[in-house]
Image (cartoon, rainbow, N blue to C red; front, side, top):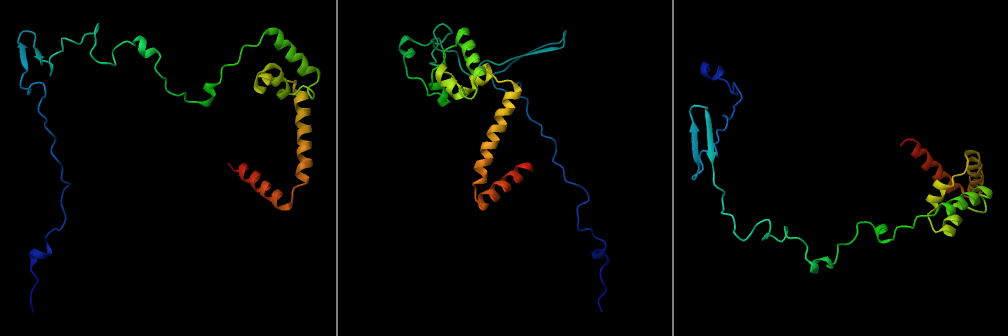
Length: 181
């Protein structure tokens, strides 16, 4: 019978410490450049390092007459060059003209006199502005707004009553889903 060797039983099969990479020692780019002039003043404990630019400046390019087309001022021929397209489609529409104070007063009177007849959309077409502008300039008092909301809800309820069972179920599920958003 063979006896086991002791050296096999007591040897470690794992590393005893984590291997670490030594810190990198990069050469100083100022001192190791081939054409560097270093001047050290011992009295003030100062060091001056001068490196010439990598390329010589062009005698043809100055701030008064730049060689780069990016630095040149626009010439008369460039002023009529085609411009890039607008980012938003609404930018192609001309800005609406400012409404006079007289027109704003008339808009408010019409809106408050009969809001059912003079709706936001109708007034917007009449005065050539947006319905949002009409709602901001000639906003209805809160009780009238609530009354309008009740009327609209009643109209919507009459339409909802005509829905079939399937559509009503789907709309109810959608509303329930929105509650959990």
